[in-house]
Length: 314
Image 1 (tube, rainbow, N blue to C red):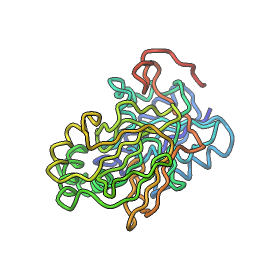
Image 2 (image 1 turned 90 degrees about the horizontal axis):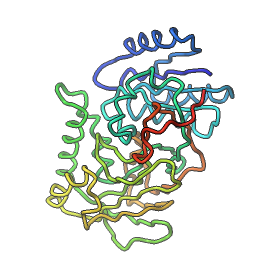
Image 3 (image 1 turned 90 degrees about the vertical axis):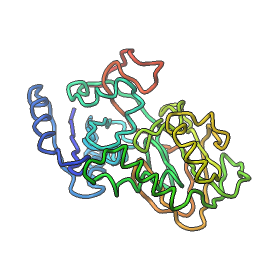
């Protein structure tokens, strides 16, 4: 088994690559493991290296040492490779995908707990050929999430505060835009929308919880669609939405399905696990590819399955 550590030196507030290198060396050399550490040099570098390693065909475990963007790169690199599996060693500001492990999320900070851990095969979101593990969104929330990077490097600004500042700016700039929206073949009657979100995971945007029921292995996506609302309405609703209360908000359409098609008047920022692509026509659906994801024994993304011992892959 080869263990590949992909370190993003730009994740979080400061470069932690030296600290992570020392920790990895201490843990892996003590166990006599075959491992490699790679510090990414540019956007997409992690994806390229993981794909290269996976294509060798040998058993491979990848540790995404960074934020959700780093995890996305590693997942995309390993997508569709049965010999490869990915996990998250979180050093970013959001680390949203693993939030659904609930009180056990902190265990992802323990490298010892990740070694020889159980794994499961997870679904992926496909947006015009771009893959995401967690969430794909367009509209108000995408502009907030992608705009948060402008605030993350400011002194004394935490990850959650960066999203809050980005939300305030986005509210002032404008809430809703015209889209043509089709959900599993049904064209929605509304002409303008505030937010359109496809959930494979349950958290994004620094802890927002749009879907409380999404599971990344159930062969379906949870779609969260907010019709056009005013600034005052979004200010009143955003707290409820963030805390998982979408079902309580009448302006929100909640559906489980397989494909969401969106036509925009002009190219829009699309959020794929915190990564940005600009598109004017989108098809968001389940990918034919899956990815293996491993996590500390006894933890689970499905609350009903926490504490169970799963089969280990060694």
